[in-house]
Length: 349
Image 1: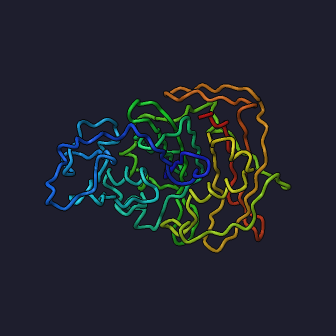
Image 2 (image 1 turned 180 degrees about the vertical axis):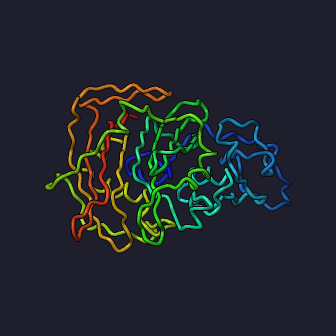
Image 3 (image 1 turned 90 degrees about the vertical axis):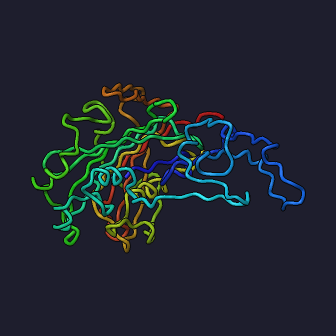
């Protein structure tokens, strides 16, 4: 799963897109002229619609943005309505599309044939996401993802996000996954049979979205102790928060973490880096507390330069804020998740 957002108020699920008038192309009025005896159709010139020549009755002068090639919709013949087709996706989006394209998983769970026979599923153990630049409305984002073995107990999946128009890397993510028995809810070692089924679709040489050493994706997250500076208590999962395996999905955990971020940070900063360690499964009847405390970096001004094409990231004490987080069960205090977030000052517009 990789779902990212474009602003602090919508950091949970998807990119938020903003208006860009450069998308629209004026339509020649003369080509739209009709006889006075015909029913009057709505004026299309104010809409200045861009429609693919093979998808609608109106042909554009040209296609001015990469987004136009991906539009799947068209204005209808009466000019009043717009129709578009959408594909039904799994909540894991690109990752599940990847394994389905490889041909060994068709159920949306990214499981192999042996895993389905043994009622085994993948669950997230750790997730690290860095966003260098948030896209704007109508930007086309290309997401590349691949998986590979991670020792004997799990697998690793990485992502790289690029601006399709410039090929600029605007974000990266990495994750570790372990295998769980769907019936007993117990973790299970990845067997050679399962490993052989998916390794044929993995890079022959290790490939990492982040460098192997000296990067924040590997930095240990200490346990946040009470009393926390900020808290949001008794959060309750909704039915929509459950994934296909009937436990709270990864995106909901991110939302709960952000619930206890102080409002002044939300107002003045945007989320740059988030790391989450998943330590316990959370289900529909659980009630959760979200705790947050400010973390002072060991080195207030540090620079991390990676290999493998990874971008340079820095910590500037006066422009960035860093926090430790913990999600716990309200009933007994058992730890569900611990995390770290890094926030940068919003750029002036």
